[in-house]
Length: 177
Image (cartoon, rainbow, N blue to C red; front, top):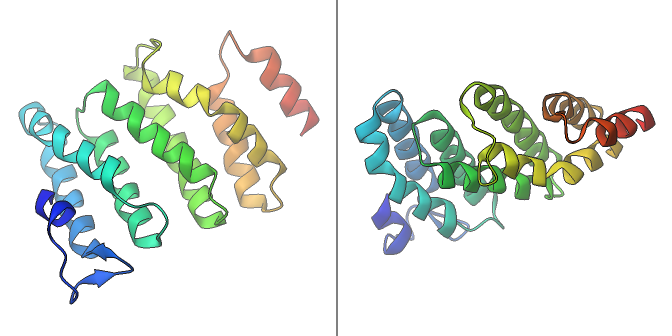
């Protein structure tokens, strides 16, 4: 996977400037299966996942597919908190995309992350849940989207985001909705 990112340019398997995205997605899926419930394997994967997450081009759908699979892997394994924050920030960037499919996937994945993190996240200033709170205004903006499925997913996610600090602000937004 590391080689595919750095030197693996092969015109036979190139999709829109991304080197063999299908193989990259399959490798990330395999890493997710291997790292789930295995702390040592998860620890070994952190550097590779960080490299994939930071070096993959987001202007192409193939790059977005790789990033999505990378986020899925980060959230499934026992990854470092900084890596989880990076995954949430990638999904936050997906929310700014004009493509409704990408935004829907981001909202859906963020909802699943919030439900999973609700049990394990400490809520500290550098945690994944606080990173998600920083994307709150973008998520609230999704309530104004013409697509009903985007609005429904945003509403579901906002419901999970409500806490003691933001209850008044989010309630006002929900009442305006």
